[in-house]
Length: 189
Image (cartoon, rainbow, N blue to C red; front, side, top):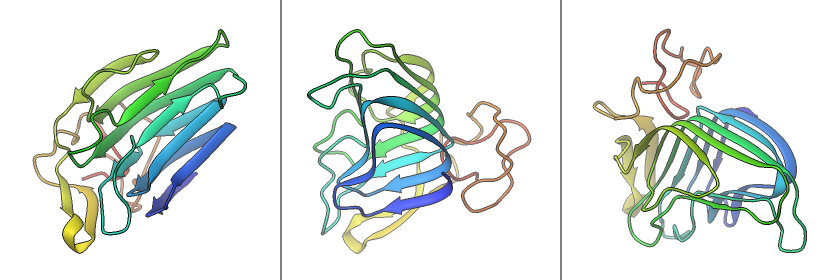
């Protein structure tokens, strides 16, 4: 999946059950559950934005990312990496925008490298590097009352020039990524 937008899904914006997904420049926003990964699989997300805000139609009641190697009846190996990503939602019901559950003894690896997220507590069972925690990413516009959202980064965003160098030439808009240090998320400022 490259340069995709999944928006306003009633339940899961992306539901992956023991799947294999490689995604870049992906925006999953304002869905009941933005991304649900269950029963293992292999996943690689680079420069993606996972954002949840309540609206008149969908409440932001669940984390924007829910990862598990189980489906309640069986477990499987899980390998997931998230590089240069943003995990954010409006304040209120959800304290941790990323939730990870590990069951059994299957191989399990979840890595977050150069990410910005809203978390009350760091998730267990994950390797964390270069995390920006609980700093508003300063999106260009989030106006739930009028249903207006622009998840591009505004001036002064802590997500600007804080990513790690990856092999992505453009952002979700098709604009060039920084030749130096890229921004976090799907959009380059």
